[in-house]
Amino acid sequence: MASPSTVNKNGETQNLMEKAPWTDEQGIAIKIYQGFVVFVEVILLILKMQFTWIQALYELIVPPEPKSVEEEIILITGAGHGMGREVALRFGRLGGKIVCVDINPKGNQETVDLIKAEKGKAFKYECDVTDPEAVDAMADKVRREVGDVTMLMNNAGIMPCKPLMQHSEKEIRTVFEINILAHHWLLRAFLPNMMERNHGHIIAMSSMAGVLGLRNLVPYCATKFAVRGMMEALHEELREDPRDFSGIKFTCICPYIVDTGLCKNPKIKFPSLMKIVTAQEAADNIVDAVRRNYTEITIPSSLYYINMICRAMPKKVPIHLKDFLDSGLEAQ
Image (cartoon, rainbow, N blue to C red):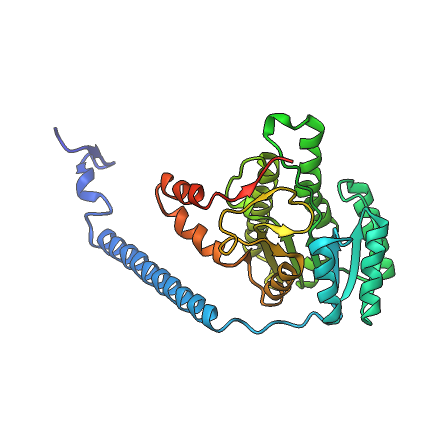
């Protein structure tokens, strides 16, 4: 097959292959330069990744110093009981201004009273967090009466526990409205001010049910997987924005089984390995993770590494481990 050619304006025939950019000295130089640039970029990438590994191992041994939350305005949903109340109490002791939000006025008032009894600063607001208009109205009121929220903990949630086919349409919609959609309404209300100031912290309550699937919790697992995805995507959205939002931190919390009253029928084959954590223990872990700006934690912390290792294995291998541990929740 003949090489492609063309005729110039002087009637001379030119071989296109001879004139191709990769055949002359300039074209070869460009190719060498491009290859060198890619080589340098790959070397820099490897060095960055190695440095990050070393930094992560160092911080595993020497954790970052906990930051102060004094005078931070910390809004916590579901503050009327369980982990929400315990976290509110701890942040109150550390000097934060605690905005307690719950749909249950009695429990919410009790939390506020407990914080004030310890000389802390607390404010109560009743709000249906599934209603975007109610959330916006509450946010405006908080700004007027307390100030701009600098830390937001999306903690409110429900956990109906039964096989998927036994859930009604209303039950499924309610789980999604409370466990994930409410996060969006609250973020929409409070994140813009954090972005304006480049200062803030978003804490979201996911679950180990947002890391691995568990029977009797299909809708719940779906919402908790969604919380983790939302937090990861939001972090990337702000990180890749040309404006500087490095002052806004994110922490996703993934507890296993916490004794808050939601877990009615836990099944634990090896209690010493997979013990039920108290709300007080969970709150200690949450506050510590937030103050050290950890991106994601599990409670207990060992489950984080166990899950990461299992995810690298063939699908059936972690299933065998899961069957051996035989832990979870029975239908209510």
